[in-house]
Image 1 (cartoon, rainbow, N blue to C red):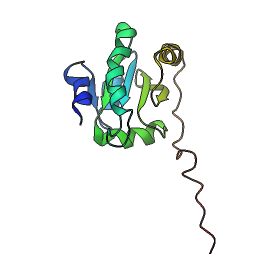
Image 2: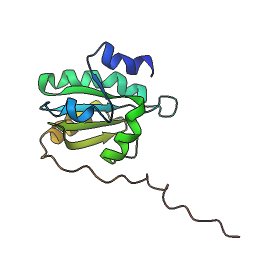
Image 3: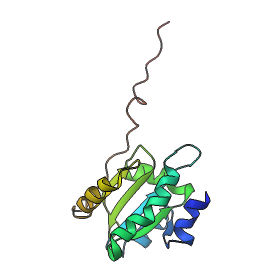
Length: 142
């Protein structure tokens, strides 16, 4: 991992989770924000989210607990929670899915969208689909 992503746990107290530990860790939490940065060498916004995520937790006080996906679990979580773009924030209540925010947002957008997500009823996550344009490839004419 990158030092900024490592700092989420070491410096900011986020709990690292993988596909085996997420349910056990998130289940007892009233509200959790799972940070899935993605590979910083591929996703330019990965490190931006690693910097912003601790500030988001501060903004919501003790209401939300920070979790961070291990790099090995990121693709699993992508399939499980049905998002196609990195980085992503997944919101859970007692381990149950509330919603996802992908890509970076402006601060005011986070301050509107996150409270809205936190008020939702738990629901199944969406089905994973390839990003638009990736699934419609046709063979070139001969």
